[in-house]
Each structure stands twice: as structure tokens, then as C-alpha cells.
Image (tube, rainbow, N blue to C red):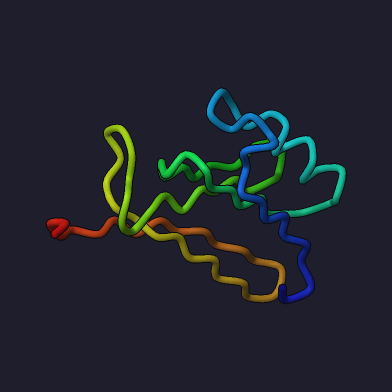
Length: 92
């Protein structure tokens, strides 16, 4: 996207319920600037070793103490901004 490599995976094959070490290593091997994963339904956003790691969470079925959320990537040339947006509503 926008000239940048982005690694996207569901995450279940990378052990994301324990940690994101395998996700980070795969992203680095692919020379990706961003790694996006799911599976846990828990929002996560941080940068490690130059790689943005994001789990957008879930807009409908967040788990644990997590609130409903979605993620957004903004790419402007070399700049990449990642944001999480929390959603406030009551589930039916």
C-alpha cells in the first residue's frame, strides 16, 4: 500500500494469544513496515523494532476487558500513522 509492505494475518498460526514475537519476526523477514493481526479480538497498537504492530480488535465482539474498536492506517509518502478508534454502543 502506498509503496509500503504490510503483513496481514489472522494470527492464529503465529501464537498471538501468548505474544507477538512470531508476528514481528515474520514482518521483519518480509521487510514490512506494518503487521496487522486479529484472532484475539483485543485491540493492540505499538511499534517494535521499527514495525507497527496492530490488532484492530473487534467492532462487534471484543473479548476480555477490551472495548469495541476498529483500526485505521494513514499513509502519506514515507509516513505511516496507525490509530485505534474505540466504539461506544451497547450490543443488542
